[in-house]
Length: 223
Image (cartoon, rainbow, N blue to C red):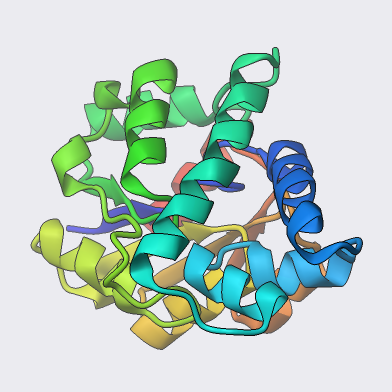
């Protein structure tokens, strides 16, 4: 049976503005310059915090320093989410997840977010309606970040599925590359934060803008 692995940020929750504001507000104070859109897409979007910090600061950090800085940034991010009416799952996603649950589709989340953010999303977006939080693969400071395939490979193991039987939903170029390296069955590019052309060129087998066309998304999953 096919299984589904969802990235989270930008894939299940379209949070580009929250990510951009929080990263720029936090990081620009550290480096005393503006972050370009290209840097955001290449070195922040879909990446582990350690890789982001080391790029912008120009030197390696200890695990403790990375965790402290990442949490400082995420406090800003979570406050922005809670203050916004746009803090909700992507359009059409709840209905799709309900349908997949009805089909008893094995599925989980593989995210570059840390554990506190995973707990935050489960609490406020009620993800336990569809997912087991203990099966979520997240950035624990040990697993290699995207474009390495490790997050997705670990997610397949948790579901007790061969990665070749898994469909991955991902919105970032680095995430598409990770899914391709993992050799997933299909890679669905969600064009929320990256251009459709970039996702296609990176290896996405299918492209969607959101989940409102449930018939089309289910067709991709069933093929």
